[in-house]
Image 1 (cartoon, rainbow, N blue to C red):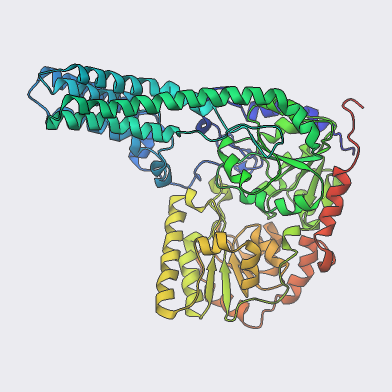
Image 2 (image 1 turned 45 degrees about the horizontal axis):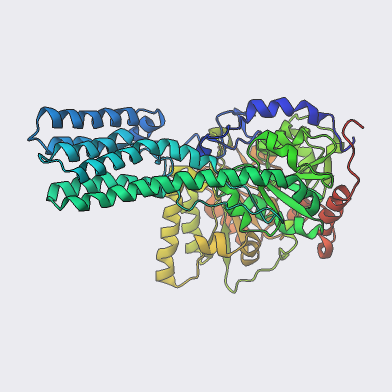
Length: 621
């Protein structure tokens, strides 16, 4: 098998079909990062199973369902029109028009799926134009004497509100461009974010109506109007200037990159809050010792990545944008997930396309046929290779290179940094659909309670996607509250929240723990390197034998059943004589490679350098 695989040419059309890219002017929020390896009913990638979306087991309120169906905004617009109609028909009536207009403004804000979206007003700019305009018109209708400042104020605010959707579209086109590229100077952040423009244009009609109602001097009415007009004008001009600067920079980018001479690229497409996929590999990519760049496909993740590295970071949203950055020095592209947009880069012949993945487990995405489109799949051990065959996925052995998991090089073997018994509880997330929901949070409170009762200090580190499922988020909050209460009562130094997920690395968590409680997660094989005992929750009702057959790492662990009825028995074994200690040692090499612990990461570095430092194969050769 050559590094210029013919398969690269076969997938170029797939990328266009599975990962449509928005043209200029399309809102970034309309884009989704779909993982091709996520199965639907265990067979194929689900087009609707976007990584950025909620898990299939999540529940939504009727109001949120209406919002998702696009019903709240037409209803709100109708209420805004009704408010003006009532005010015209009954000039003395004020309460009913105000209520109708108020509901017209507030109703669309109640639709976001999560509190975080509501707080950040994501998706709000450019909406509620009818409701906000109705408030402006009510300011005119509620007075008998209409001075020229009132006419000017209403005209300016109404114009700002009505133009806002177009300005918002323009602003969302002015996406970040690049960072850390010598010779390229483009401002990547707006002077006034569109969400702030929305807040100003929402406050202005409310302020105008309030000022009219209390009867202030006419000149005061111009203050909210000037603020709205200035905010909208600034946002529009700023967006236009940034787009112009980006187009000028595009003319220089090819030359600038050629001078940088990147030997490899890290291609990454994922929703915000997923930077752990990059952070786990970035130190080792830097240790390769060759110049490289990071190609980000989702503009909303640009700031996360630029905060992590001094390497060039480029936003390339459209497939055509990739053509310019394939400079002569580039030989290799690394990938850390199976996002559909990976196909946009894999289509380039002559480059070596290497999948690193962001963790290995026995979940279905770890043996997806999608891996066939890469030239190399760097895997931790033989278990990853056997996983494909065991699940009926025919893949050439030449695809795989066993490099271990360099991330575990600093994991202590059979030792802990804690002075008292410490347990790490690290549940996975709910998956993109019910078939891939292995999350143990439904029994999480029982697990943590049992650990506390046995005198354990608990490090609680849930998956970053936990809050995408409301039920799991609720259980996670209960666990945090339980640990907080025990900190006050017992004084034990439980670690949870940011202390466990941000302050501590995963390696820190491993080294602090005597035992691990988890589920079907890549955390488990990584923890296996420590040779310390662990338990896995079988959340889909399998027997221990069935579970170990489907998820072989369970052979080295203690299995908690779906309802935690055997939890005490498992904890007795894991904290007692530990009969599976020898089996863990045997399976460690199978899952993580049989390499010298003193030079464990060197295996990956040697293989990566061998590919990166090769001479690029000319297209068509």
